[in-house]
Length: 148
Image (cartoon, rainbow, N blue to C red; front, side):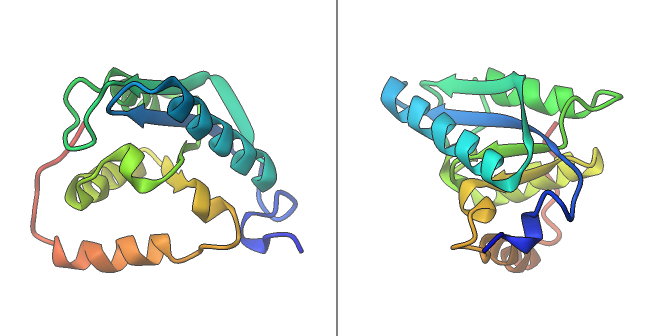
């Protein structure tokens, strides 16, 4: 049964970038992340913009420093016209291990109408992550430390 939320017939064909990260630079891990993202994007009926597939190898998930791949995607999200609609990431810790940072980054990207999706959100088995982030965001209201 098709995932109605992400059914390409119900929605337009979104353009997607992909972001991968590994603290150790493990090539197999980075390739696996990219493969899972590509598979999820295809299953959603969307299009990958290969020019905006980015990787940060040997980059900590605890901060945004030395994350040139992510920084380039943030900069591209601010371009007019935008080269992509969504950034697809394998799972939340690949973006950041800090919930506050994740919420701030998602908010910054939303200002430019770019959404972050995790593979599990595109695969029908797990639809609760966005709700969890929305609920967790309430407890961080009032914390202002903009990113980008």
